[in-house]
Amino acid sequence: MDPAHILIVDDEAFNLDVLEQELELLGHTSMRAANGAEALERIGAEPFDLVLLDVMMPRLDGYGVLERMKSHDAWRHIPVIMISALTDMSSVVRCIARGAEDYLSKPFEPVLLEARIGACLERKRLHDREVAHLDAIERERRRSEELLHAILPAPAVAELKTTGRVRPRHFDDVAVLFVDVVGFTAWCHAHPPEEVVACVQRLAEDFETLAHRHSMEKIKTVGDAFMATANLLQPHTDPVMAALRCSNDMSVAARASPSSWCVRAGIHVGPVVAGVVGRTKFSFDLWGDTVNVAARLSTLSDEGAVYLSGDAFARVRDRCRVLGVEPVRLKGKGKLEVYRCEALSGER
Figure 1 (cartoon, rainbow, N blue to C red):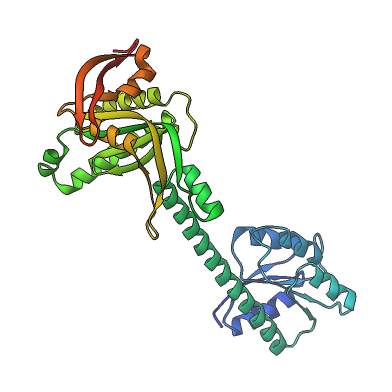
Figure 2: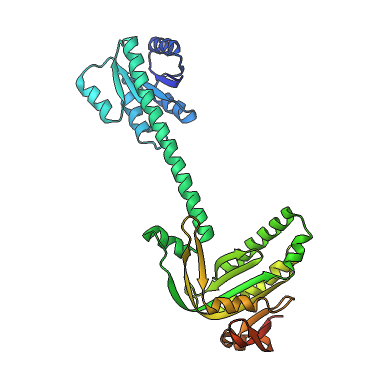
């Protein structure tokens, strides 16, 4: 049996001496308390594996100490063996009913004391192992949930936890924003990997914060490209303007970063299909022409700019200044009207 730290509570010094000697012979360490109030102070000051508790004591008797311990969240699992000269059955029943693990009558047999202590410590050891196992499970559960929230939007996580799956859906009137860094590939080749990852991580965190601030939902990050939506899983009354303001703030954040990056963005609005794919590694993604057009708009220029499709521009026509761009031929779509945003109305 592993050594244990045991609290002895008795108002008789002789009884404390005897119990202390017995525990020392068994390889345990002990601490004394001469009354119930002192016992509670000791328990609150340091951890104990077991308490040997006398019943009849002044100030606060063993019944009172037992009740306080079993009503305290941090103490209730400390096993207690009551030791008393009282041998009537009502005292035994009263102690067991209040949570005592065992009851010994004075004078006690050392062999019986050893057996009772060993049994209580074994039960506590099993309980502590179970608690540690449950704590480990809870830590893993929290970590899994954190990972899910890092991969999936919050509403998708809630649906996955409730039903075990995320049902694919068709969504109308979704603003899709693509943002990427101009000249990122060349910049990567000119800098060490550690610096590349650190800078991209900082930029991604800034972009996530800005997307949340504008009530947009981050969908994914692919290399230096960041994709977000408005009015997808969370309703938004003005999704295109949210995407436009968000892209402007992202441009400011990128230029303020240590790398002084320049970003370009594409915004389109329309229907999308959204769902979760993958079995062991989940990925929430969007499909459809709306996504493709926004992605291609973000690649129209080799300099920082925000490009809006004709449908997106129609939603913010009176609230931004744009340069009309000649119809642009996009792969798979033919020629489309495209507008380059210069500034939001009232903003420079």
